[in-house]
Image (cartoon, rainbow over all chains, first blue to last red; front, side, top):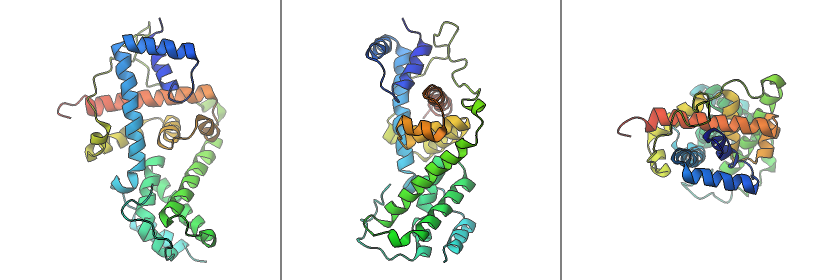
Length: 80
Length: 198
């Protein structure tokens, strides 16, 4: 049986690459039987979703603004 | 990525100085979450406006101004990563920081067991406090891990492209992403989910 440590690594890899069939099968079996790896797998899903939406919604949702200095500097630079 | 507030006009008047007022903050925020540094984000936004200014004759008005500028910004961000990682010595590809240290015992079993997360991702992101925690946790990742994670998970770039931008092997990229995920998970577990009342 594969260890939880190796399983955690494979749960990351499975999000970036296509794993061989037997590896995937073993991974699914382990996750099915192991509560903590199941939680870890779920939490990686939450993270992917949350981070992706955080990035796509930043334009509207992030409170930061361009500093007045930078704004002026940029405008200044836009001349022929 | 698109301006959802109002539909893009067919053709927009383009006084370049007005671009800065109209799109500056949005582009800055876009850059900030992907570059994790105010100064750097400002610099890249400035480069973006300059590049747009120089190529304004070629902007046909087919896409909205915002979409056009955002596309230039995306390219500038990719350029930044390419430049940055070309300069890093080859011996320093992965780095010693390993967020999975101490997570498992000698036999590879969990020694710090993952807690339950009762989380609805949509609801989480509506909380400004959570967004701040997430930003802080992303900021605490070691630089290379954060870069790999940003390109792969925020930008959803294919792994091959991330490898090229960061100039790492497939194995090293796997290590970086695994450590980034584990580190971010740990940080959120401690700073958000582990706190009562959240």
